Image (tube, rainbow, N blue to C red; front, side):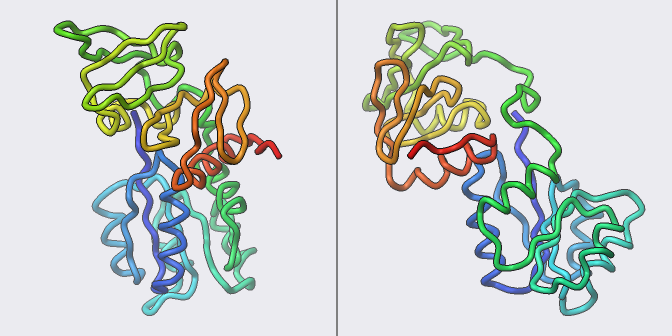
Length: 236
């Protein structure tokens, strides 16, 4: 499973907080690294690879455009700024998008889609299509595409698969980390869901076949964010 690493280059605490909150709604991003100056950002970019850079124009030491000019190879960059005057120059430097603050979460998602240049609904983020989990004293194979959803069951979990239930020796938080996050999403403290199995949903409930699964209040933003990123529309 491939997780995405993001670098936020911005000296505004409030702007950084918003970007961190937006990224946290996307389950395939690791917690971002933060830099408040071009100098610090340059050092980080020389040390490691970042899949995405969220770059402000106005920084204390140099401009964000100076950072872009300093690298010979193109970087996957979304400019996030309150200044509308550098859009043309930014696009000339091959940025993926130019977001004017304040911008919405949906606008941010479109920019991320453009910057990453991938369709997250495809299986391009992982080569594995199955997992082995302990059932009793044996290890059993579970194909990702066959799993409908998972329900917490004390120190175990119930895996609903092919119209039957299998109890596995894992707690739900462990399974959340083990399963590919572009396919499975925690939508309630007691439920993990295979997103490809959704028939319909509303503000409180997700329907998978004949099953009605509660959508927890604290999980709604991440669920909506993931579906928006896949260009799906919420039902009324």
